[in-house]
View 1 (cartoon, one colour):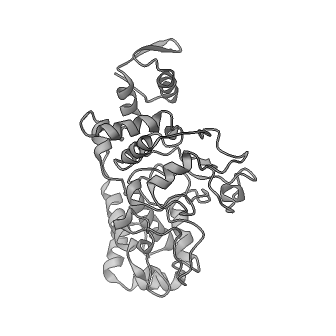
View 2 (cartoon, helix red, strand yellow):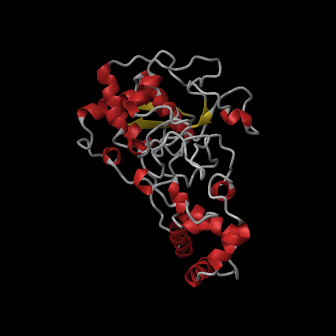
View 3 (cartoon, helix red, strand yellow):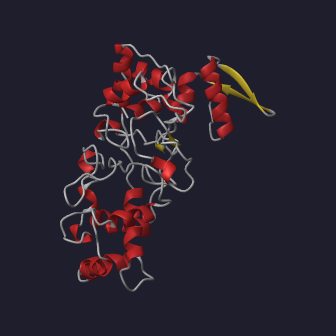
Length: 332
């Protein structure tokens, strides 16, 4: 059996796959490991973690956060909520190239989905916020988003006795509703948003018939000649890193954030789970379909020195390969 709990073992396995040597043995340090074959390796890499359940107090916070996520009282004029942009029926995005502000104009970037964010350590396309709590505070106060006025917002919530009881149950040591408690429950809800299991998960769990032959060909391209797995690895299909992927843009991305590399228009790698539901794509919503995304990587990169080293610069895919890769992405 393959056990990939160690990054070193993962690297060994990926190296063996790339070299075509899977099947047989590998040596790491003073230990020898045996492998079942390519599918066993990839199934281990993309396997979901075991659900440990949710403690009762956290469950109360999740439930309260879920209610407030769609509550328009969080906005200054009572006409918007978090769900106005992060719509559950659209994969917690909004289907627009760029988010729409209170005044009807477009905001700077595409609305990212909210699936599988609990393990993440940075948020926004440029990674400028380190926690979901700090991220939630930004749209809450932004003048062209919810534009909440703190004292008015807390007074609204405190006037609702049912909401007061729910906060008291979720925060038994706090006598009043606070902004930090509000942000905490919103973050708790967002952390609970795990993408549903799909055909790809069934394949990962050992059902060879869960994917069609075309979808399996797409997977081989994803982890092979396409090089997609270099950034979209693991069960969440993201490295949580920042890369310049050759999109035409004037947006400085992470280079304008402390810790970003000057001049490199890098943006966070989005997780690909439920990707078929979250069009359009990229930080600026410039690619309308998954076919457009595949076409971008297979011949439409904007060439510049800052391109991510992991990008396959001269990737060529014939029409059948493109269709297969898109078919695979739709299984996620």
